[in-house]
Length: 352
Image 1 (cartoon, rainbow, N blue to C red):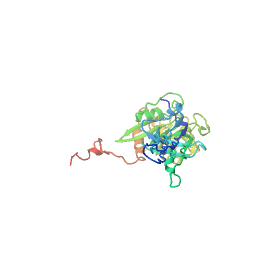
Image 2: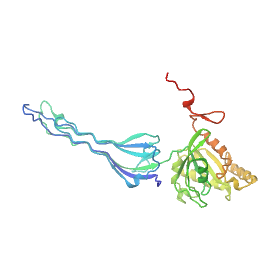
Image 3: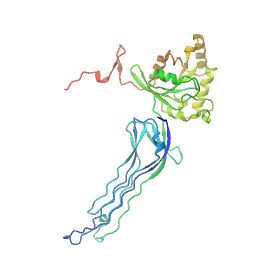
Image 4: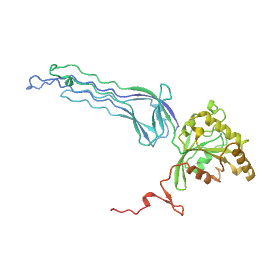
């Protein structure tokens, strides 16, 4: 499945149905009056966040969404049928942004099942029966129904993840996410093997969290170098960032500075998020070199450095422990022997 995180679409809610002009014509009813019913309401445009989607690819092929108009009013005081709402299903984490300035957020769907009525359908027009008065006993006026609303909007997907991976190309991010999660990211010995964000579910010590891997950053990414920084939006919602640095690079401290500068240039609160600096590929270096580079990173501003190997798993457990400290309290408990105890097992079941 192709990954698409931005799409421009056209929306139009349904117009209200017109009211009817009708008169009673029963054979034995003298002076039959007006009995034209009102028109039905037009359909609303509703957005719903669903868990089964993780891309906006469907909106590449369908860009126009128009709700049905309400039904016509009819004689015998019959009101026209209201049109059904048009429900547009989007991935969780989708933002709806105004096309006028490209910045105003009209809605932000961050929870499964969350719905929002973006455009309301028009109200049905009045039939001539509603105009009857003591002095106007045979009105012929009616309303055509309120027109629906229309709008061009941008859909922008920001993936929901608890932790995000950042780093230069070839820092070992894909290998790391494959090691700790159920992801199957492409791994290669060349730059930019990751072209689109990847998500993986990490299970560690009875806890679960979502880890996001984004394409590597290079110097000047904020100005469009490399793949640019557009994918940084997918880690704006993360609670903590894991910054992977390749120990086999020429200057790990300089690599850290480059990525940190790009995060600050992007904004979006990324420069304020907690960082976990991970010195990766330590299986390719001796202990003395690892200790020296770790000290350089601390001198460059890192609070703590985690030497790890994404390939062998060395040091990964300590890093994941640190990630858990930034996550909300768990809903499960851990027995002394390491077996997870679910809340449903806390008490024996009883019908009383």
